[in-house]
Length: 136
Image 1 (cartoon, rainbow, N blue to C red):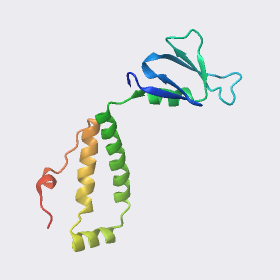
Image 2: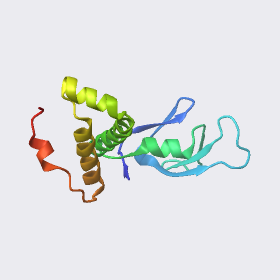
Image 3: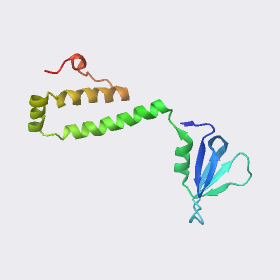
């Protein structure tokens, strides 16, 4: 997890603080109520700030994956969802798509599975000819 330096983090009710000055987060368990969800410890103050957002939401805003890793993870999620949807296409519709518009859903499923397997580090014997084959 990487803390983004100098990022302004929303603490709730119009309060913001720099991510690199936040040194601790503690959920409020007793006397918790409106506007009292988390104690935020900052380097420049002795007493913690009492804020309305949860420690998890503040932490998510402070820390993030580098942009290219975030985008890759988002793409993996989209491909996984698409793969599930492809799996549900009935065989009759698959044949119609292949015959009428030359869309081979089986080939796309294999390619996406292979790509997702590589993303996890698992070995899969994805069909290399699919990468270079032309439709029809």
